[in-house]
Length: 248
Image (tube, rainbow, N blue to C red):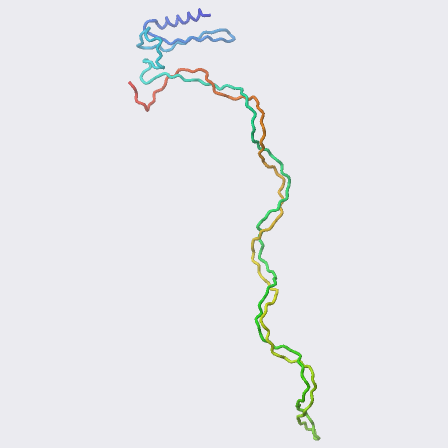
């Protein structure tokens, strides 16, 4: 297998010349269903580098044949691969929908009461006054003089005073009486203006679903995840920074 490879490498070296030019040669052997294949890549030749001197020196990608301000940097390549790992058991909080049935609740609400007229009993002050009242009084027996009308023989009327006895009796008289001031309960009509009152009302809350948090234990299991992993790298020519001055 190595004889064709050696032949190809020798041809490449002879084609470039063995005296003053040096080339970068990479050999790659590919295996597939059709068989084996050898791929040889030859890079650009260098200038001004003497043959056989500093062959094993590494200059971190810098070379005098790449111009001023250019250098080679190693870029690491990454690929996303699927990794299988074990997640241990743990406690976690999950949300769960719970059905809450109909329920009757009593709440305090502010209710507007409109203006209305009401009759209330109030204590009213009545000031003192004097008034004429009828009273039954006892009158003792006495002689009184009365004027009596008489008629003479000619039919003419004349008056005479006669003393008559009036026995004791009761009679009604109007007397002046003083009534003192006093309080009296009276029914009066009052206007109650519109206002808010706190009233206990019964409300019906219909059935609904409610979200509650519950703590559950999740058992350990194997899972897969995508992770970034190095898969080699390649050399790139670093572009000069336009903000940095050129170094001679």
